[in-house]
Amino acid sequence: MLDAIPFTKMQGVGNDFVVVEQKRVGPQNWPALALQMCSRHSGAGADGLLVIMRSSVADVRMRMFNPDGTEDMCGNGLRCVARYAAEHLLVLSDVMQVETIAGIRQATVHRDNSGAVNSISVEMGEPNFQPSAIPAIVDSDTIINFPLELEPDIFFPVTVLSTGSAHAVTFVEVLPDDETFLSVSPLVESHPLFPERVSLMWCQITGENSIRIRIWERGAGETMGCGTGACAAAVAAIYDNRVLKNTPIEVTSPGGVLEISWNTRDEVIMRGPAETVYSACYYLT
Image (tube, rainbow, N blue to C red):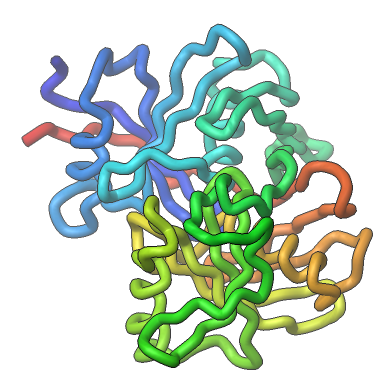
């Protein structure tokens, strides 16, 4: 095993990752490595570990591990992997197929007239409202505007769906202050209704095709951005007629803006930035 792990730090709308190529580091205990490298105080610091691997069914394979070592799907991470794969010539096309824990996803790297990358769009699959996709322990076909009981007789309305990862979406007039956000969000994440936990998207409708969100990710806590969460927020808002249908929705998080498109019949398309921050080596402890 290597004593040092070469990695690239990348970010998409403030959602930051350590990106590792498996062929450069060999077999690793990826959950344990995520715990080490993602630590903000003793590691490289990141919202997740992205591992790029060979795939037998797509151009490349992406595995994403949260800071607590759990494996998940990640939309912002998918865009970062697509840019990395194109720029490091792992894939010789700006249109590529990426194997993920949620299935194969197509990513397209968009360039300006000079050839510089200006954004990446990814096909995120069809949203799934079935409780079994979360999973959630409820006796209903969907969880739409559901009164989640946080404490006796205290209910919190959520719409819950999977966009590759499980998200609860709640709509508020004003995004919560720190006290409310930090006290309520963990209760929703670890609610007994969700045996594998759930992320929470606090959503404020700011226009007929715009949303602002504050994000609590399962396994990570508050993050600056969340691609699958932005998709879930836009889909829930479209489904509930809170924004215009058949038009791209701008979802603004503290880290930036993502453009989400969904026509209620096909899969969700997400477009946004992905940037390289630096490359370095992490020395194992």
